Image (cartoon, rainbow, N blue to C red):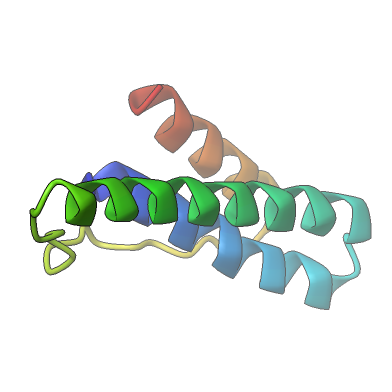
Amino acid sequence: MSDGETNWNKYFYIHYMMQEDWGYKKTASHSKDESTGEMKHAHKIIERIIYLDGVPNMSKYDEVLVDDDVEAQLNNQHTIESKHV
Protein backbone atom coordinates (compact mmCIF):
# COMPACT_ATOMS: atom_id res chain seq x y z
CA MET A 1 0.00 0.00 0.00
CA SER A 2 1.37 3.38 -0.89
CA ASP A 3 1.19 6.27 1.53
CA GLY A 4 -0.81 8.18 -1.03
CA GLU A 5 -3.54 5.56 -1.34
CA THR A 6 -4.02 5.18 2.39
CA ASN A 7 -3.93 8.91 3.00
CA TRP A 8 -6.29 9.68 0.15
CA ASN A 9 -8.86 7.41 1.72
CA LYS A 10 -8.38 9.05 5.12
CA TYR A 11 -8.80 12.53 3.67
CA PHE A 12 -11.96 11.65 1.81
CA TYR A 13 -13.50 9.84 4.79
CA ILE A 14 -12.71 12.55 7.33
CA HIS A 15 -13.79 15.28 4.94
CA TYR A 16 -17.00 13.37 4.14
CA MET A 17 -17.92 13.30 7.82
CA MET A 18 -17.20 17.02 8.25
CA GLN A 19 -19.09 17.96 5.07
CA GLU A 20 -22.07 15.90 6.22
CA ASP A 21 -22.03 17.69 9.56
CA TRP A 22 -21.88 21.10 7.86
CA GLY A 23 -24.90 20.30 5.68
CA TYR A 24 -23.07 19.88 2.34
CA LYS A 25 -25.01 16.72 1.48
CA LYS A 26 -24.06 16.40 -2.23
CA THR A 27 -20.39 17.08 -1.60
CA ALA A 28 -20.40 14.72 1.38
CA SER A 29 -22.04 12.00 -0.70
CA HIS A 30 -19.35 12.32 -3.37
CA SER A 31 -16.55 12.22 -0.77
CA LYS A 32 -18.13 9.17 0.85
CA ASP A 33 -18.38 7.39 -2.52
CA GLU A 34 -14.72 8.18 -3.25
CA SER A 35 -13.69 6.90 0.17
CA THR A 36 -15.67 3.68 -0.30
CA GLY A 37 -14.13 3.13 -3.74
CA GLU A 38 -10.63 3.64 -2.39
CA MET A 39 -11.31 1.28 0.50
CA LYS A 40 -12.40 -1.42 -1.95
CA HIS A 41 -9.30 -0.80 -4.07
CA ALA A 42 -7.05 -1.06 -1.00
CA HIS A 43 -8.80 -4.29 -0.03
CA LYS A 44 -8.05 -5.79 -3.45
CA ILE A 45 -4.39 -4.78 -3.22
CA ILE A 46 -4.05 -6.29 0.26
CA GLU A 47 -5.74 -9.51 -0.92
CA ARG A 48 -3.32 -9.73 -3.83
CA ILE A 49 -0.26 -9.14 -1.62
CA ILE A 50 -1.40 -11.88 0.77
CA TYR A 51 -2.21 -14.22 -2.14
CA LEU A 52 1.39 -13.78 -3.31
CA ASP A 53 2.57 -14.72 0.22
CA GLY A 54 3.58 -11.17 1.02
CA VAL A 55 2.87 -9.08 4.08
CA PRO A 56 1.16 -5.72 3.53
CA ASN A 57 3.07 -2.83 5.09
CA MET A 58 0.43 -0.70 6.77
CA SER A 59 2.71 0.88 9.36
CA LYS A 60 3.87 4.02 7.55
CA TYR A 61 1.57 6.93 6.78
CA ASP A 62 2.09 10.52 5.75
CA GLU A 63 0.75 13.22 8.03
CA VAL A 64 -2.98 13.76 7.58
CA LEU A 65 -3.96 17.42 7.48
CA VAL A 66 -7.66 18.04 7.98
CA ASP A 67 -8.98 21.22 6.37
CA ASP A 68 -11.56 23.32 8.18
CA ASP A 69 -13.67 24.46 5.21
CA VAL A 70 -15.09 22.74 2.14
CA GLU A 71 -13.15 24.76 -0.45
CA ALA A 72 -9.82 23.90 1.20
CA GLN A 73 -10.89 20.25 1.49
CA LEU A 74 -11.71 20.01 -2.20
CA ASN A 75 -8.46 21.73 -3.19
CA ASN A 76 -6.50 19.39 -0.93
CA GLN A 77 -8.26 16.31 -2.29
CA HIS A 78 -7.54 17.45 -5.84
CA THR A 79 -3.86 17.98 -5.04
CA ILE A 80 -3.54 14.54 -3.45
CA GLU A 81 -5.38 12.85 -6.31
CA SER A 82 -3.23 14.61 -8.91
CA LYS A 83 -0.03 13.39 -7.25
CA HIS A 84 -1.09 9.76 -7.18
CA VAL A 85 -2.87 9.24 -10.49
